[in-house]
Image (cartoon, rainbow, N blue to C red; front, side, top):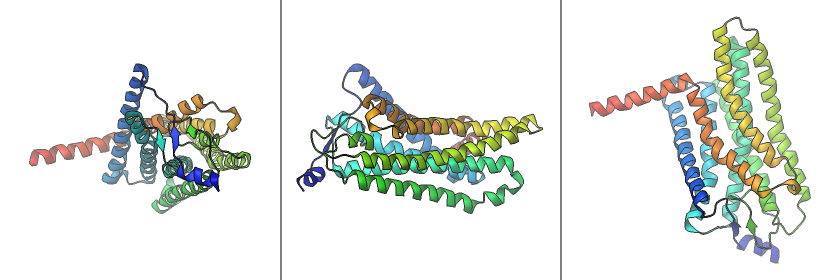
Amino acid sequence: MAWENQTFNSDFILLGIFDHSPIHTFLFSLVLGIFTVALMGNTIMVLLIHLDTQLHTPMYTLLSQLSLMDLMLISTTVPKMAFNYLSGKKSISPAGCGTQIFLYVSLLGAECFLLAAMAYDRYVAICYPLRYSILMSQKICCLMAVSSWIVGSLDGIIVIAVALSFPYCGTREIPHFFCDVPALLTLSCTNTLLFERLMFICCIIILLFPVAVIIASYVHVILAVVHMGSGEGRRKAFATCSSHLMVVGMYYGAAMFIYMRPVSDRSPTQDKMVSAFYTILTPMLNPLIYSLRNKEVARAFMKVLGKGKSQGQIS
């Protein structure tokens, strides 16, 4: 009981990733710049897809969900990290820690399944273009998106329920810039090996099953593209799919590195750097990759921008 009281009544300490040296101050400013770009880029993507009726297709509906997830993911970690750095306070309450764990685990799982749904969408569009409206209807697309959110949330609920059931003692210093489960488990007063194995199994399901769907989808896509007679068709197909593959490679590579290794093999410095990549850098890169390599998104942006200018001139 004493351990339980300590667990829920004492704050955790986030050691962070930066100190106040000139180099780290510059790096912190860089992170704030990345956060701002990610915030603006993903917000613009969500608004563009919502406002432009020509983008109301399954592909862009899924893309808008990806941008929304990235927006939430980066907002889960960076604001608290920035507040702690600027205020000099490093504490986070158990409730705040639990909220961070639930959100990033849920979003991580949801993005995994959403990226698989996006790969399936490209597979149907390229391999079965005449049946696309049936196999990938708006109803099926919405069902995929909602299912991604539900699966991710269930994963988050399971992880947070088990993680916060352990007693935590000692210095309660988390060697990270946010409440990451592997970092938190190092503070537990009891043996967490069973939970680590359970989490590893969950990672296999959450990460490897979508990866298998993505690989299978793109094997069929590549074979279909190779047999295309039109060079323009090949170019367009590769341009569309390459953006998605770039995002998949960055996201899954970092996630597997973090969550599919035993705790004994982890390095706090490595974990912080890789976590910073997929929770801060990737959400910024995703909208840039899709917008810079997509003429339809650029057209929608110029269209909305043109409307804004014309309305300003009329008023």
